[in-house]
Length: 204
Image (cartoon, rainbow, N blue to C red; front, top):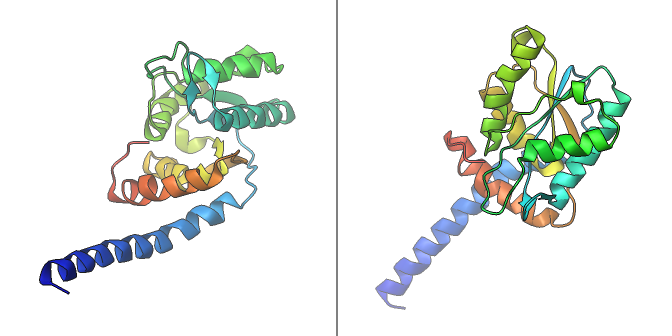
């Protein structure tokens, strides 16, 4: 075996080892949170946005979030909803927040209970932009409020860390199932979550 091949194998092995170690350190937390059935009581429920197909069709994961939000809000009539997400994809015609809000109204939720955050493009921005809206509506500081976020099971761990970094001390959660391509979503959590979030870079 020549020297070049040995170096290539060594580098490849080192990279593979890095991914195995870091995935082993991070993914168990993702899976643990994904397997918990979060259903915390709150005053404000942030519904985190998701992918939009074409002009205004929610992806399967976003549809599950909207369905879960409608159920929760019907069961907790005192809670206000904060659908999150902007309009930033090339073919998109409605913001994620508007699509979620429309679904909630069609599901029987009073529009007066809905506060739209329709500027964000990432999970970090969901929290960053929604918290001032919640504080303005309530007239209280976010630290004095019970604010929960609703998202897919695979997203619970990362979104919880982002919530804390955005200033929510008591992070409350409401989870819903991850439809279809669950393996793809959990694999993506490693690359987005460990490689970016744990280094303090927020892109999603």
